[in-house]
Image (cartoon, rainbow, N blue to C red; front, side, top):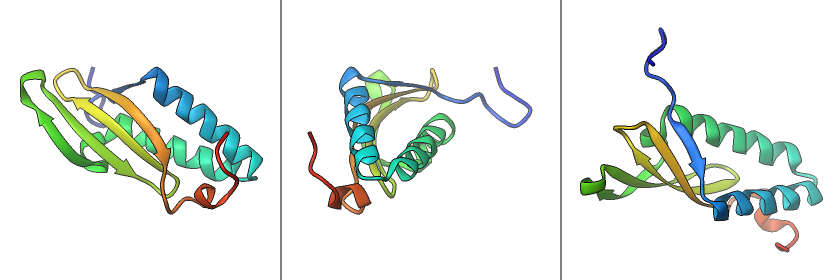
Length: 111
């Protein structure tokens, strides 16, 4: 249902692997004393995925028969690989990694 402010947000779902990656990165951020930076960036990424996934990331591939576009977006902390199905307004997060520019990339090594 569209709202007075525009179309409805996209539904965002993450693969099990992406959810595991987020949990591991969150633990790493907390250990490094970067909890706030990590969760602020994660909230921002989620907002962009829900409201503007096609403009946030770089389109890598177009799967026309499936009606799906594959994207990669980078923020100050994260790199997110995801697909967008425009007709159903769904976003599928496949992978979440650290940006090479993230302060976490310079902190302790992953588990």
